[in-house]
Length: 143
Length: 315
Image 1 (tube, rainbow over the protein chains, first blue to last red):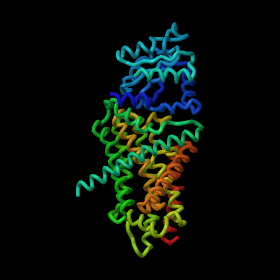
Image 2: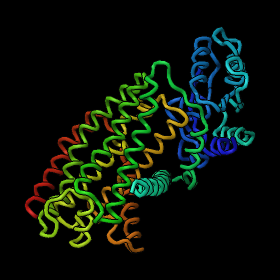
Image 3: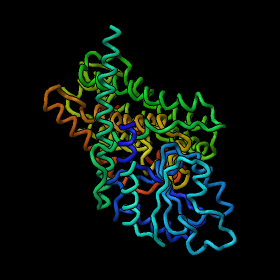
Image 4: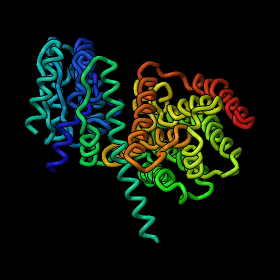
């Protein structure tokens, strides 16, 4: 397991899942992947399919319609994987937590699907790309 | 005798694996530098493969499991055997067998066909679209690739020592004696056609329509994960090593002499071809599949035909 964890820490491929965000966090994730912040130094690459991913960047409050799809995307991701809840909306519902379409925080949805899931939180509204890098580095260091 | 063959295959595969990982790193590093950033560390390809080997293998419910899992292995094996034939022809030109140029061209088509088969076996509509694009791309670039391979063959055929032959070893020996294929009008045109066809064979931008990440979410490779995806990445690394060596062998003299000067020259030729491929990749957008087919049939193929005609006339 040592070599696998080394590989996972040195080469985390990310897949972006938007389950009902206002797009602010999505824009910050897009900026994270631009040459200015250069996350390829850490081996991070944006992949097009959840099956290729090691880290799911989940943004947005988990709306009632998106909940089943989020679970499906999580199950399609090859384990071991880390789920990053990006922004206050993904962590707790943020400013939309009393809205009619909000179901549960992303962590609860993922834990129900997989009790042993590795979930990390990156707070902010939206979190700066530097905060996301810090969150990713901290999460990978605990693996 | 069998151990000799197996040993040669394993040694060539190990060397091509190392060269492929280095080439893939050079690709990513040059891309990063062109974009004013730092880029990944040198061991990144090894980390990627290690990580993928440790993930679970997911086979979709609608996939044909056997074809889905075997196709990448077949593609990798074909690339490895093509690499073995090319290295044997470069190191020992007189041990190469007649017709091995044809065999190498056939073997180099197999990774693309294996991709098509694996994508069709995935059971995903995205992969099906990617497979149809790969089929169209294959139909478009194979013609200029084969025509450009005829250029050095025609040049060798005019020489009295060798006569008409399809042996890569004879091509290497002829270029060692008479100079590179590049130093002739037909050779220069043939090299241009070969480099563009190589760009499509490696499915690099502007010809990466089958794996279009922004359009097809991974396209042909969308349902692969874990070790099968590692095999696919390995076969892409192998092709990134084999394709420059193939073009260098046919047009730039290959490994002229097995001295340290010859090895250094071959390394320089491979790096130069890689940098050309990577710079084309970084300065062009992805084109539509119909634009790509039109480009190869009506743009590159006439150049390759002109090269063949010039080679037949002796220029």
